[in-house]
Image (cartoon, rainbow, N blue to C red):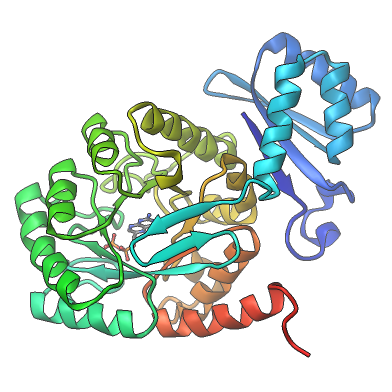
Length: 377
Ligand code: HH2
């Protein structure tokens, strides 16, 4: 697998001196020891910066250079035509030449426009809005409010995944979520997603009118894969290391971005092999899920690596603890959330999962106005 990363956002030299003006950083995974050695030799001959790591038995080589240098390096190291072809395809997906698309009832995600997924937790214990919409009537009111505020998708959850959260059984989760899904479905045209790791809850929610599944366990369950394939609905594959109860107890990675991408890549392959349509899959790095603040920041910095997977990218940074670690503001996390979300957009995020719809909508409009095509005279 190739991961391509562009220069860091902002001043490349200041942000990451290791880049030394090079255009791209490439991670080449799953090479044999022999090919990795050849690549290392050729790269040092060509004066390119390299670093080698072993991740789950794969040799992962980091090379910095522009695309021509990388291509010629692979040819010289005799990696074989298929590897060079795969590099070209990864580069095509990275640069968005192939485009990303996701259809939902009444709306569409494309590379050109970022969407807002509003968070609606029908739980007593979610880390930010726990208890606010636990009452069914209040949840429906809040959903309608978020629709009026401009949410493109509403993501309804009945089980908190905050670190240390107590798991909820399928019956209780369904009891919380299903009435809200059916009621909202009749009252708003905004597509509804259900945030669940349980195939039985997902199935009942689709029957009740939900049109998308957000699976924080990343389609690990064969039943979930079969269900999504059968229903043909869009699905979010999110990366999580461990389980919510224990995931924050000293998570470790050799190369967090590579490992997250490798997991997403494998789950995309398994999902597609189970019959899920390629244009129904969204990927998510799972900010804060089995990650220290440092891991989350590294993933955000390198979010563009996920573009190599060729799927829409969902990003959930809203009000998470790494924001408080940076700003020192434990209570006021709104501004930090918006700043992180916009940074994510610059790196290729297509869908932002947020608690604060109107504030993010206004900030996003400004960012889109500046970064989009020049429409102002
Ligand atoms: N984050 C949370 C829950 N679900 N799903 C995706 N795809 N990506 C995320 O980043 C993500 C998610 C945690 O946020 P929240 O729902 O507000 O909290 P809780 O799990 O405590 O209900």
